[in-house]
Image 1: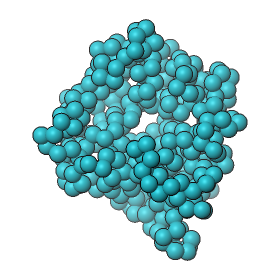
Image 2: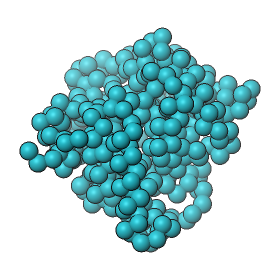
Image 3: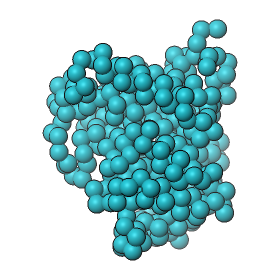
Length: 358
């Protein structure tokens, strides 16, 4: 399917609230910077809501204090309206699916789901992002995971809410787009679709932070790796219906300064640590820019014109948040505006790169 540049002009653009500034940056300053950079909506990160709630209530708010989170969420909605921003999605809802029936973990997961649905109503969003679980202690049957997602979708449905399921490339069962798509098909609910991500697929199917090159090496020559990746993208374009892709998140990844240890550290597998601090804007020195662009083109090749949302975790090339111009180091308002402006420019460049010549 040819992709004309004009067909991409109306793609709605979003920016993740957690992707600019630090944990101490005021949410309103973030919203102002995002708005000035001509994004039309945000992904509301739960950490930002939690911090805002503690400031708003002048008291430390617990993650499960849903009364306080909802009243603060109503204020966040008003702030977004003040800056002309919608709330496209609440994220990240993690480690939900796969717990054994009757377990305390499963009970807690569904209680958390009910609380987050309350938050969604308060902030005025209709979409919940669910990241594929990375818990090691789950039932690994895809049918079991799909049944949990179907149950969550059924909780969302009376409110006309949707579930956007994202592959996290370090997940226990579903690290690839094909894995989450197979689970979405098994769940078989009209309000479940995909949250795809340039980083998650490029870093999962082409990159490896434990090697000297930062690339997967076990497949042999780079030509074989490139062919494997090309096959995956062609399969996506051919098999995923456009209407089942709700969001495409956009970021690149830096090559680690030294290869990561191939083990779990602080509860995160190597690709999870890579995701946490090493994800810059596209076209700003990342390792997998070409592969990220190819993935975005494959997504657009399905015919979707879904949300494009910038979600980066840019701690600089060292991942310490101290690199010049990195997102985590943007503290002052001018720095945040500058970073969000560069993000907007990077999306424009991506759309140009994805389009066929007219």
